[in-house]
Length: 234
Image (cartoon, rainbow, N blue to C red; front, side):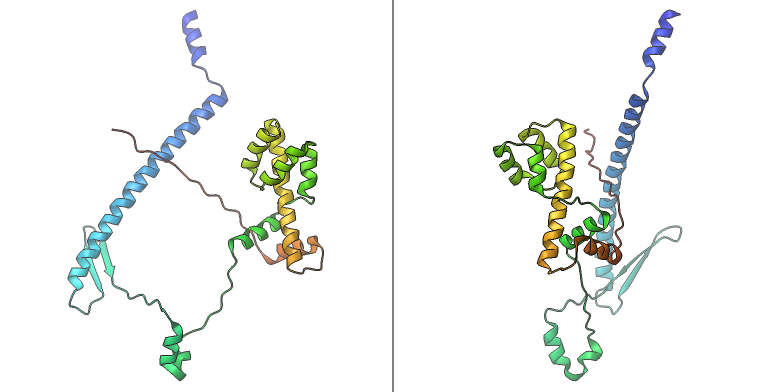
């Protein structure tokens, strides 16, 4: 009886162990589904190519643009030929059409934000900054001139890499390195924002610019989940 109780106690798991097992199970399930989705996508691409080839032959020497292929239970694959026109020179086309070019060609002007612009606006709108200077932060991290010089070169505002670098170069414990890396990233963001405003000739305060940004843009946070899976070995 005592042996049975001892074995039962041995099988008891802590909540952390149960959670770790659940996470492993979910990761394995996600990886399996990702591999299966990949196989399904590859098969669908092959079938798509098969029907495209068949339709090319069936529509040859005809004026038809669409071919349909029926399966069971009212399933159908439709292949449609469509001409995609991508101009090399619209100037030449406009010269050809002359006075009626405006009837055939629509002129559109579209403003598109670059990736750095989106990053800057999102940072300002979400408040991912702290007023200050990187030199001041570095001075608080270490008083060693050599370490300070290295930190000036190495701190880039990338939290994970800066954290590892601070642990290695400045000899900080992990949590302290994490805190300083976070602050450095926010201060670097602040300096970037003020530099852009200065280059733009902005005459108001940084806070006034931030208020305008928050009124001018809407930042929606999205979460992307990635998976790396390896097919099981035979």
